[in-house]
Length: 381
Ligand SMILES: *Cc1c(COP(=O)(O)O)cnc(C)c1O
Image 1: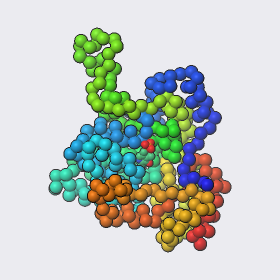
Image 2: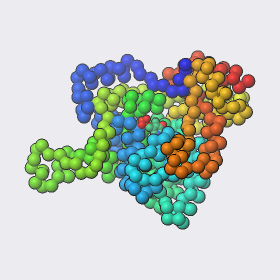
Image 3: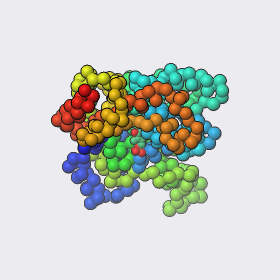
Image 4: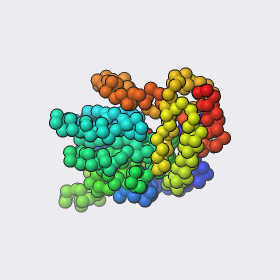
């Protein structure tokens, strides 16, 4: 089976991890700060806090944003559940902004209208989590302009986006228009640490809050102690209720090695996406919008004449590991029980009902991609 996504680990990655196993601290050593510095250098963000998953990164970003009970957080329904769960962890409520059928990201006109109504009704969101679906950036400059008058915290779910650029030429994660960005290093993402994630920000206060809550809410910084406690060399202080969301040095060592290969991963993904664009243009499909700066996390097509289940099953039977991104978050039983109705998200429904994700990852060879293309042509003929 050709999977829809996969990591690329080479001998240099393996050597980097083995070196830590043999010679260094397994956690809380030098690999993590080095990884954080590498993430800052790559994206241009001032601060990076590496954590143990993208989900943890989103949770910490919500905490730092001050999201709590009584608050509402908006996100895109066309995403992985973690984009919304993070707000629920904080005791807040979630609502969704329908997508733009072209970009499959949250729709700017929908957002503008929803904000106007919320301002009138006094139920504006505390934060908005903009998901860069498939690695193609939301227009964060416009989203910032819409949300700025209402003092809304802007968080990017950039789990798909590392290695891509936004519409204005900024690296995704630079946080030029957003307060924070969350990354994921799950093996199907742009680069991997096995499990892992990070919060990026240019804001010193947000960075300190994220760092504090990633490690139990405990600080060892004596400036945060009372004068008496500053005399105690063993002292540390829990200042807030945090979590153990730390990344280990083994994972960070893999990240430090992978980030050197990131540009080559993105180049391969882009080349393969362009090949799909050319090879599939004659088929009865809606192809993803051309975005030459996308990180190309996934390549999703919409069927226009065929039954999705039949095509999906036939491709799987023929060894093509297709997938569907995403089951809209409001469709999960847990969210249905919170009262969400699919009728309120017609564009997300329209996309979801016909969507199929084709294999795309750095190590997908041209031969394997040709097999995918030929099989798809055969199934749709
Ligand atoms: C992968 C992913 C996450 C969660 O990341 P993990 O590292 O798996 O916890 C969140 N949001 C989106 C859009 C993702 O694709």
